[in-house]
Length: 398
Ligand code: ADP
Image (cartoon, rainbow, N blue to C red; front, top):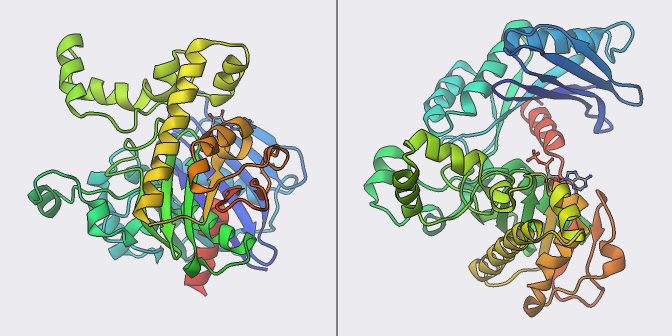
């Protein structure tokens, strides 16, 4: 039985899933939190059993990987007899720059190229590399694959990825739009084709990945042709705490008014803006949803601005592709918030989107949420980035 360990490593956290590739089912999953910080803990969840929480110091990622492997092979709550049952490891890597247009088997050369991309994602890529390094040390000889968040969007044409700034910044410093959530957009757009019983090549799909981080992607014939995130994940939609699109001159204006330096300003745009900043309530949309239900105006204005921005992007991507056959909603909010889906779709009636309220009253299950006569279909498709990473890994290691 082939099993793939999927690792998603952040600066102080490590998420994992062990996936049985014969059944494509999750054998165990878990999260190591507060790595390198006081109070670190590992939550290990074997499938069909109670979760086990282990509170133990994790000074670095090596210790975290060590604890994950110990949990997976533990006599009581483990799921495999020993590490040799892990055929390969698939790593999520945030930024592949222009170097990686698909997943790759990790070699010394690949790591060197990934280090070169770290400039573009200083918050994410170094953590991903630390995770790869820790696994390589503890699992020597186990093949490893890198799956990039940006790779799916490398098919974007130049007219979509260029910014309206001097071209030399692209040629000299690689400043262009890259896009993220690519593994999710790829998975969901493929599922849309399968659910509608069509070939991906024949479909124009718009995928809305609406989580804490959120992005929209135009997928034409199975290929990403535009997406809302840019050089970094800050561009595009109004997100949980990120501003999304805005006039860049706002930065200078606020920095002068509030005497902020550029790092403080970036912190405002990444951590204090978005739904949190506009509502002054929370970045969690559940609280916004509750606030709206109670008639809270601050919650309502954040909800309305969020919904409006998503609808605007969908409209612009319908133009970018000269049409659209299906619109898919995914991630925390897209999979769980029927009202947001309905409100977004209500802007799109001109395109021929007709929501069926009864069908839309669903959570986390693949569903066509439009009426049978709706010209453009809208769907709820739960994302599964880990499975996509595991599939790529198996395919590459053979
Ligand atoms: P990320 O992976 O980017 O951190 P998620 O995909 O988990 O984010 O989405 C987080 C958002 O989804 C939050 O705003 C949250 O309110 C919403 N969400 C997640 N689960 C639910 C749920 N069961 N019901 C309603 N909203 C949910």
